[in-house]
Length: 308
Image 1: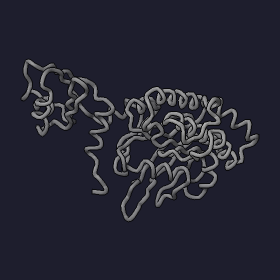
Image 2 (image 1 turned 90 degrees about the vertical axis):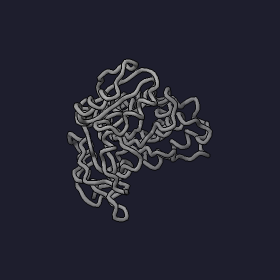
Image 3 (image 1 turned 90 degrees about the horizontal axis):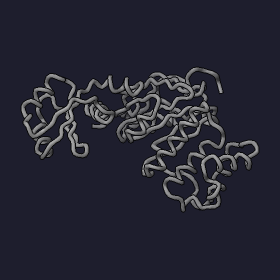
């Protein structure tokens, strides 16, 4: 592995399919030992970008490095040092956990393969299930197997594409605890997710919509860049109130959160004027900081759909 400050350092990375730009001139730097969250709606280009980073696709334009290796000319070197966990479980369901890990270790020519498999089983809590067929595992246990397989060759970078989709909250929390332990040991993680609570556990974030990078930075920096003003309202008949608010000048989002509504917009004065026009004694209004979900919906609404 080449020594640089950044595990990922790319500029202007672009990919087209059938004349459509699905990743548009993205610049991204991810520091070593960092958990970097990559967020955006379905079809935004996140998976395509990850596949270019790990050497499975070649960019049509742009330059840069992954683990110090050129993303255009040194893809074989990158593959040896990266662990890539796809959205879909991609291991052999008619093999046991141990057999799957042994097979992956063979592919990577892992030294002292049996010992490496045993260490992986123990670390991910799979030892007691090592003879269970992968096809018989629940979503959470399949996730552990997939992570163990990604780590079997001791990579320096993990690329995780929506790894917790369909996994219960306890398994998700345990997965994230493991990721933070790995990062503290020096491993770099780039992870895509649709869960806002997971995004908040990342060191830094980037938001991609329709192939364009719209925001990046720490959680506080991303929220600040969204420049969104939000009010929370409680009281009776919120559905009728929401209908009255939608479409008014200055109101860009009206979203139900349990027994409250979040009402948001980018122009504070116009938003307050819209609220004043429907305000009454039955409802309680409170100005609150915009949340990550509010900010990201606002970013998505402002983006141009490149497939429209």
